[in-house]
Length: 194
Image (cartoon, rainbow, N blue to C red; front, side, top):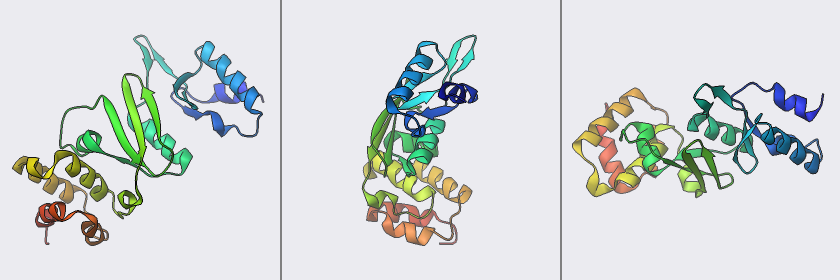
């Protein structure tokens, strides 16, 4: 089976990486991908990141940002963490959909475009990935974006609800210690049976 056949057999909506085909010569892979871009079989999302589009009568249906992030994390064996407004949106602390999604990664930094959305992956320091649970690292990033002086009672209510919906009894004590003092003093009283 040729490389072109292998790629075209992927289902519509698949995210593909050029370097996933290391068994082939680089120039050959480049030529095959170029041909598939020309005939519309693939769409380039970023350098080395491609998408086998889903076509609708309204045009191309691009993948969700979360699908692209998950595929990149899996391929790079990396941890990816939403930051800034992306973290706030992810947790429901804002309803405003970001036009530009920002993530920290312990993998390679890169920029990816999905439809009209830009995704920026910035290399983050190890401390950002020292949390054991899933809620606290994202909450930490969201609180950093909000800022201590801008936290409202509504935010506190939303955070309390998140903690109830996402109980992490095995990791919460460890993760609280990693929060800056102001974040810890805000979050700790919101934990049930604290």
